[in-house]
Length: 432
Image (tube, rainbow, N blue to C red):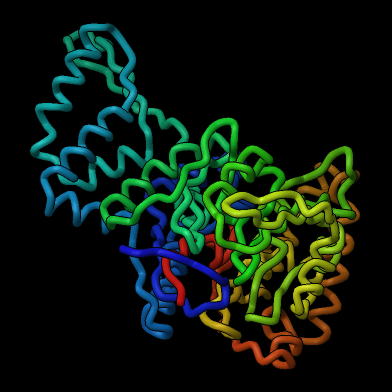
């Protein structure tokens, strides 16, 4: 399968997704430790994900590849894939206890493999369990306790484990331990699909796909909490065909004290900036003017600093793009995390209910820590009053009509609780 993305506004052809499963249940036991913004309904989140994929497939003709289903179908069809899945799953399981009991448990697992379905082994990869075995019963029974070990609760954000450029797919290296194993699973999918890997970001680099934005002759790469300088340098080695790369430094939010920043409010480039068409971008102007861009020019197969640093706002304006501004509350409510289907046509989060949930969560944070979040809360509350008075909640903005942007709203008030919208939830494999 050939992959490639030159510009974010080219017609979307193929995406990969992952419908959240049991791993989300474990993430919701402690949402903040799982990198979620808030608690939400897992049942409704799965319904919303179904609606997202159905919209892509039925309304826009996008080919939607499901991670789990593709792996399982291949494992059931190809004994070699099944063997790899089984071996990898058993390597993932940690067994603790008496040496003899551990050995016996290992033997039992191997003996039972043929009787277990492929989903059993895929679930082991998702949950990364630890088995604690031991002789605990007076009649000779065996105690087995199965605590989890960082289940992959964020796997449904399929944007981040890789980035697809016009030169191919680059495997990422997430910054957070909770997400560290995700690229291993998605890389298994790429191998099954026959997608070549153009490069891999390795230690000490960190890089996540939400920080990459292809824009035709140039591209933007965000750096900050999730993508570091070493990761950017490695990524640039894999993307030699853009004439220019703008390296965007994650801005601190002006309403949060600089000595106590919260990087989650704009963790990826696509949480405060995105593309709606070949001449229109969307983003929080407050953050776009604070985000500094170091410009790199292509020299053969390498990139060299152009010696130019400008704000992201000025940079995209100099490239001829109009900017649709987002309020503080809209940006916090995932309005920037749109998915461009084709030039001038986007999927966007239906904002009203999400805004109320974000406000409720922000109120709780401000109650616990008023010095850190008090100003942000007051500004967001003022935005909500103003937007409610106009009756035009995102994405029902006049600016979209003025710029000729067609908007398809999606109800994602539960899925966004994990800190992302439709852009984060889809890995774009093919455009054009």
